[in-house]
Image (cartoon, rainbow, N blue to C red; front, side):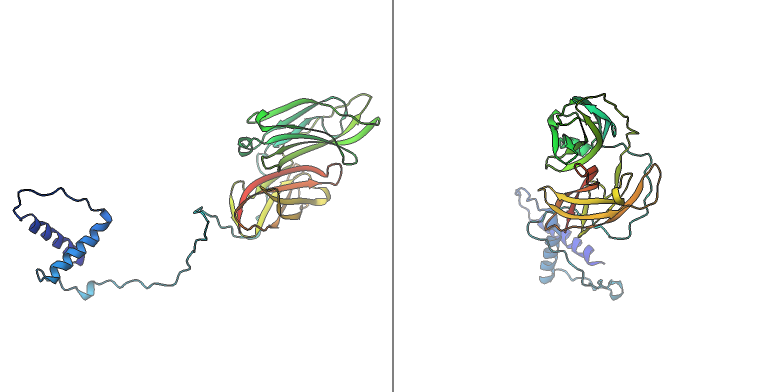
Length: 329
């Protein structure tokens, strides 16, 4: 007979003895928590053995299963103030070869009108296509329109608040005016999305020629495809360590380089690096880029990974795309 069956038998005997006390009235039962029942069985059985009412069975040596050997296992010690948030360990390794995504995604921001090197007079019609990610729509990203002169000065800037914007994919159509002192001036027109923490999430630009007089000439864009595509890291994922792998494809790479900046929600830069763009053409003028970006954070932080095509002209930025991830030391 096993020890467990013996203990259950003793408990049943105790219930039989208790039921023969002959009392006409019994108090209401007391409900014992289920987790206390094994302890109660052992206490009852041991008391009956101690009083000599029963004799426990002799265990069969061959039926005893050896206890497993306990080895030292590293223990995780909680840090005061930490929350029980699941973590995702990222194993660093050699980045995988990149391929061109199919189908190509549409740009988050694409200036449709005026196209590159259009000649415009004030006011001109601005038409931009917006396809911001759902997370940024929920955060009510603001849309900023900026016009930079050839010396880098801001000629005009307008901001459309997130509350005034439309959800989902939309078209921004408006008249945009400017003033210049000369007859003509080259300029850069930018349309960008800015999150509630004043970080640029995406940006498209086009270079135009501003006219104080003369005949406008509007050029067309080629397509609505994204110019920069981040394939890694994936948005809203948790990454641990001190290095972040960034991979993607681009069809704009001044000097065959891209700048990557990691910006936290306080506006501080926690990491940056310049990545080289490979010469291989994956199709439609897209070339791959990849690299490791060191970063330093003292605690878990949401950071925006900005990949920037910069040329040093006008505002210095041609295109920008980003994703937000959670990083932990």
